Structure formats: structure tokens, C-alpha cells
Length: 97
Image 1 (spheres, helix red, strand yellow):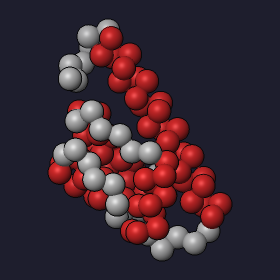
Image 2 (cartoon, helix red, strand yellow):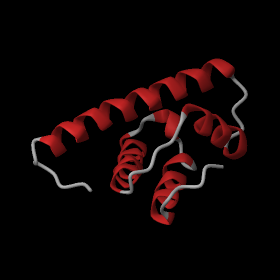
Image 3 (tube, one colour):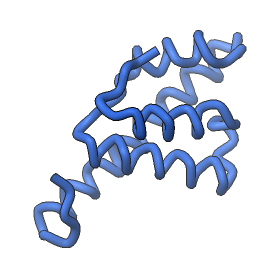
Image 4 (cartoon, one colour):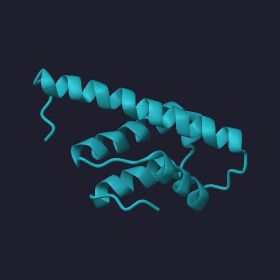
């Protein structure tokens, strides 16, 4: 599995990923955002291939379509949130170093 720069980021990732991340239930979405916030706060990242590795190591998913859809959705959400964070940083509305 991916080694994050921060143990807190790893903890937040596992809290999200070891639940039911594919459901996008409000609790899961909150855990996802908590993970993403830590990811950005620590100038870290996660790639598509690292997500695939995490799925193979931590989940028992066998449906390739489910996996592909999940990865596409997660990476899309990360990109979207990242752009918004960058916008807020540029406008000095948040201070993330």
C-alpha cells in the first residue's frame, strides 16, 4: 500500500477506505473529505495505480467495472476538490502551506 508523508494522512485514508467508500454515504463522504484535507495539508497525493493497489490489498472486490468506476469517481473528486483548494489558496481565503 502507498506510504504517505504523514501518518495522519495514512490513518485518515484507512478510516475512509476500510469503511464502505464505494457507497458515498454521508459518513463515508465525510471520511473521504477528511482524508483529502490531510492529503492536501501535507502536500501529498495518491495516484490511480496506488488506489488500484489499495483495492487489491484491502478490498475483496472482483468486479472490474466497479473498480474502474470507483477509481474514476475518486480521482475525479480529488481533482475537483484540488482545483477548488487551489482557487481558495490563490484568493487567500484559506491558508494551506
